[in-house]
Image (cartoon, rainbow, N blue to C red; front, side):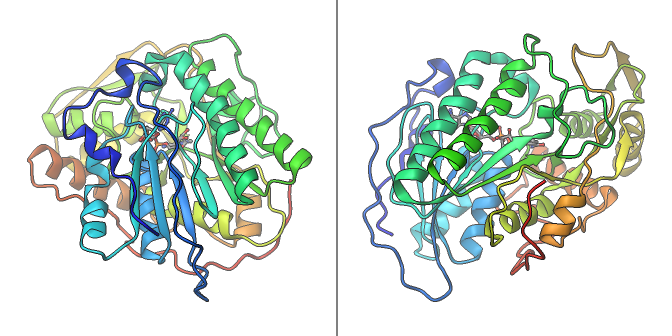
Length: 384
Ligand SMILES: NC(=O)c1ccc[n+]([C@@H]2O[C@H](COP(=O)([O-])OP(=O)(O)OC[C@H]3O[C@@H](n4cnc5c(N)ncnc54)[C@H](O)[C@@H]3O)[C@@H](O)[C@H]2O)c1
């Protein structure tokens, strides 16, 4: 793959950030020119939108380790170029085929790719509520632009949907058959309804135009490279604990979440994408172990050995009380289960933030099961 674009370098040169002016970083699409590989290992040219974000950067790493050529497209609105610096260095030395493009997917994109992972979207409530209209545009226009590209290129496309499509669920655990309970006008609606509408257009492109889709409903995922200060509970608790500050628990802390470590999630995402057959989804991806937020806080206090205390604040509007995936479809279809326990994953994440705060972190560190995943067999191909 010819290396054409290194636009993310603009961030190091003091270029404007997209949040200054939503859409301002959109660039004229530039095609990737190299012909498709004929390798028998099915080396592919893969586009990852949101590739400089938390999940996206780990996914780029995994795809490159599997020998694919990767184009990372990101507007850096909630991601960080530092998440992929190590990949750009490896590309500079010729070790991997990795390109980057700074681009807002609200604008159309042309690229010569065989597969698309659409992850671009702010994921933390702080990030998406800061720019709600841009969030909806990213979720919906971005999805349409990527689906148009997939249609033109005859490429398979993965959509990072979310457990938030279930809203405040009236069913527990949440299976893919449950249609959800979402407030369409609340402060979280830009994200929840944006992702719901994105699912709608994915299935319409699939039915109407035959675009091969993979729609995953990702449940809470955590690990190294989550953004400091983005308000998500695990980094917020860990940072408070490492600084000896109070851990802020919303409500009485009895609300639950199910947390999946990043290495497991990347396994699931790649397995769903690579699965043979018409496995359009939607498919829940995550870890079904449910933990009360107050117990999570206590575990992090134990791991860090901090003297921090708990502080209680009112529960935010429309914050769901219970969240646990029904993973029956994932396990039956992909034959996979999470391998990293909450204790192991939290320890690795604490170590990452500790090193980050002390300035000792090296880009590329942090994967507990580096290189894991490998070839994953698909047991069956069925839709809910
Ligand atoms: N982390 C989770 O627990 C979780 C749960 C459910 C779903 N998801 C989904 O997974 C995806 C990745 O989430 P994450 O946790 O890595 O978040 P993240 O904020 O770290 O990553 C999102 C990336 O998308 C980029 N981006 C945002 N808007 C864009 C736009 N218009 N054009 C181009 N790039 C844009 C950001 O700069 C960032 O790098 C998101 O789509 C999110 O909705 C994540």
